[in-house]
Structure formats: C-alpha cells, structure tokens
Image (cartoon, rainbow over all chains, first blue to last red):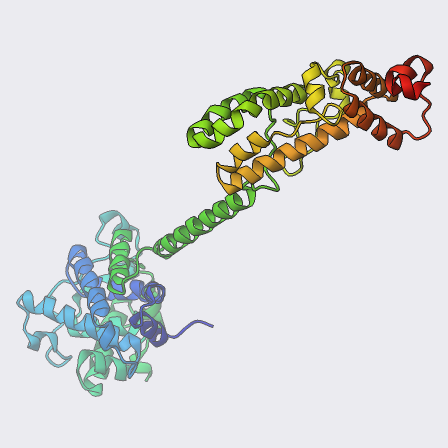
Length: 189
Length: 258
C-alpha cells in the first residue's frame, strides 16, 4: 500500500530523503504542466517549477498535515505564478477576470506557455486539438488556472477555491466559463 | 455538476501532451532535498557506514595479529631446540667471560677440557635441528652414520660416564646461570635434553658387542672404574647376554675373566 502524500512529507520533514523522492515523482509531471501552461515560456516555467519545490523543501519544518499535501503544494505554486504575473505587469483585476468581464474577442492577457509550440509537432495535431490548444492559451489566466488545477491536480472545486484564494462560487464560475470556451473550440459549442 | 465537467474536453486536453521537467532539473531538486535533510546522494548511506566499518576491520585485524603472535611466541616448553654445536659453545664462552669474569676465571681450568669433551661428545650426538617446533625430537638413528656414534677421543670417554653422552659441564652451567634465570634455565633444559637424547640414542644404537668393545677400550686405557660402571649398566640391560670369548678378558679384566 502506497504511503499517503502527507505521510511522505512528514517522513521527509523528519529526515527521510527517500520520502521526498517518492513525493516528487508523484507530483512533478502535473505540477510542471500546471506551471508550464500558466506562464509564457518554458524557461520561465522551469525556473518557477524549481522555485516551488525549493520552497517546499524550505518549508518542510512548518508542514503540518492539516490539509491535503496537494492543496499545500499548489497553493505554493499558485502564489509563485501570481508573483510571476505581477512581475510581468498584469493586474489582479485581470487575473480575476470573470466571465462577465471577459470578452472572447480580447486578446489573452498573457499568452500561456505553448507546450506544442514546435511547428512540426503542432502540424501533426489534428484540427480539434489544435483549436483546443489555442483556446486554452486564449483563456484568461484565472480561468485557465482553475481548469488546470482541475485537470492536472485533480482538485475539487472547494480545493481550487482554497488554493486560489477565491470563494467557491467564483471557482465554479471560472471553471464553467473555461469549459464553455474549450468545448466551443472542439466544435461542441 | 455536469457543467463543471466535460469528458471530451478532458480527453482532448490529455492529448495535448504530458510534458515533464528535464532530468537536470529533477536532479537539482532532489539534490537540494537531500542537502536539506543532511543526507548525501544514495551512495551516502554506504559512505556513512564506511568509517565505522573500516575502524572495526582495523581493530579486528590488529587483534587477530596480536593473538596470533602471542600464540606463536616460543616459550621454554615449546621453543624450537637449537642444536648445541661446538661453534655455538665457542661463541658463548667469551661473552660469558665478559659478563662475569670471576665466574669465567673460576670455571676456566675445568671449562676447556669439559667443553672439549662436550663438543666431541656432541659431535656424536644427534642433531635436532630438523625437529618440529613444539617437541624436542632427536634426529632418527638412521640419519646418523655408524662412525659418528663412536667416541672419537679417549678423553671424551673419560669424561663421559654414559656412552656417547654429553658430559656434565659445571662451568658451563654456572656461566649460563649468569645470563639470567630464564635463559640459563632454558639452556640447561636444552642441554639436559640433548644429553638424555644422546644417551638414549647411544644405548639404542650401540650393539651389545660394540658396547663391550668400548668397555674393553676403557679398561685397556686404565679407566677401570668407568669400565666397571659401564659393564654393570650393560649387564643390567642385557642380563642374558653372553660375553663373547674373544672379548671376555678385555671386558671383564684378567681377574674376572678367570
């Protein structure tokens, strides 16, 4: 039986380096994709990803399993991504853009990282996926983030609300609008 | 709740790719995690044990060497016997004289003839050089030539009470005693053993006729007392032996032969 994330983190806090390796192996992929698709470039994503894990390491002594490890990890990541956005000059109001304020005709506030920005690979994607990728990039960052937390971290709406620091209804709204845009891109609109 | 889920969107998203961090980034993060808790890389666990294991190995090796040396240290009972040769005795004599001049001066008048007798007798004694370390075993009789068993000098016969035995040498004993109780005791024991083995070898190797011929020689040379003692020893050993007629007179003496 696999140890829970919380048990592994406590073990690491108590000096078990192998516990961290297990924990890292479990979460590195989803977290990396969350960061990569939240920021503009791969280099920045790697830098942010590295920074998030360093903060986890540094904060190990303060870790208490009062919440899911995933929630704790993505809260750190969210804060780092928001800091990144702020450094890029984006306003919190833009980050919190809701469906009412969002105009699909507006250009994205910040182009998200394009994992398939290699031209050759992009050409190989079928049209639906290409449109889906474009729609994901075009989502407002706040909506995109909610969608990514749902897809990559497998979080529930309350957990997404906790991580992003918004209320549950706002989380529901963002996810609903994000899905609507993506569904539209797939031709189900 | 359905408005918050869309399997088709989720499936499409999965096909966009499953990027992972580069391996170098993985390594850097894991290294940082190990450093933070004071653990080295994976081989650090082995390295942690390397020092205590090395120390333990050195201690065990040292102890085993010490124990082995103690077990193999020769003592009085287990020492490899050094053959007492005339050369050895000659080398020892001056050193003893230096160490104790009074003893050497007192022993000198007797020492030379005694030493000579001893050396001559020892020439006939078996050489124990090839004996095993833990037991003093004289060289087998077969290794000795018959001629070597014979006394080579009349004076040796006069000094030696037993055939081909090692004569008593009080001066030697006194000198040895001055070199320390342990060494003296050791050498005395060696000499006694050499003497005993020589006597035993002589008695064992000498034929009854040879013994009688030696008695005859003693008597002919005027060592009547020694001849009588040797004859008594002969009769004790060979009570049923009939002395050949050609030797009877020479062995028993004129009076007894008649």
